[in-house]
Image (cartoon, rainbow, N blue to C red; front, side):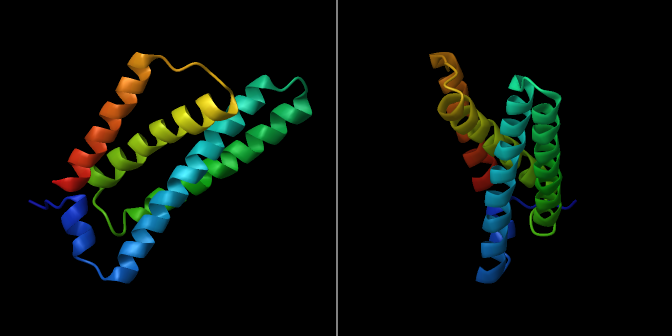
Length: 127
């Protein structure tokens, strides 16, 4: 059975491919946060124009998010890539969008959950 984790799969490639993997991970995170932030702005819009403008931006960012995940899957197995990208998205949306941009309160339990997500990413990516 095909078994490979993030660490060994990235080690199997040259430095150029590691750079590509990291660029795809960073792009995936960036566009995922942009998509979710756009949808929040869309929900807050008071006009149809604002609603549609943010929806279009959010959906374009979502498309790019999917495309970066697809590119990442050329280098990293799905069972490793998906939890890492999903976990990073949780952290990015919670910290950047919710807390910084919208000043939404994040409880201690939610911060603890974020730390557990980070621990999970480390476990998935490191073993």
